[in-house]
Length: 325
Image (cartoon, rainbow, N blue to C red; front, side, top):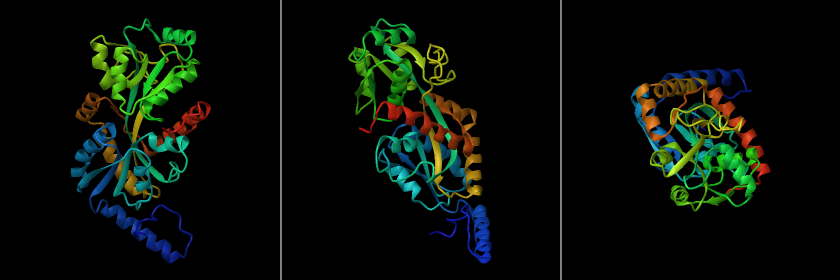
């Protein structure tokens, strides 16, 4: 194990070891980072990849080391890699909520999302927009709920992989509205947009950057955004709560994590620089143009969100009997 791997863990050995650990931790604080930092990202070309590359470009000059983005397959592999990495701040993970929801959807996930990671900062959030084809004679969330109750099991929604934000947004809608809109699973979720426009499916929860052009062209009708508060991505669209479903909230979030045991000094350095970068006006504009909002946070706020999601969506996943595809 690297010399600094236990800096933040309690030592119960001899005073000599305690003294040595204190010296090692102080040395790490003074020298971090001492080599290139790699950020592991699930998938290629999505919101996480975009965020990681932008953050890497911004932080590399400040930290004085190259930041390498390492794309890995979507799934549990990125989390497993980081959970097993040395807790020295040179291997990080930028992941969506699939990191902490995966154990609720499938067995034998090789990490514990609470025990095996150190939260650094929330990075972005992006609500989905509930959209329907304009040919569907529905003008509001309340009208959609009424239609779905009159025709249980007859309407369909499109979604990506189980546990994705558009999947859970739709299932939360089903549960809270007490309706039965059936899922159509798409390996390529963008195909769901095409099928929605043509009327092959009737409901879709999808990211703003993709559906707003179709809303503006009149091909799709927006009913609500899935965030608790109005979003800068689509300020003219009401929230689900405003539209008649109080308490509804389901957003896609990305957070930055290190392995468990990341020293407090390293967490502080990373958090300070990431939050400072995300709060820059030009950076906020770039993220909004790409379909998300920056959310620099404290490590504690990210940790609280993780635990809240596990509780809230864990209940939904159990009650709806959702499983990984």
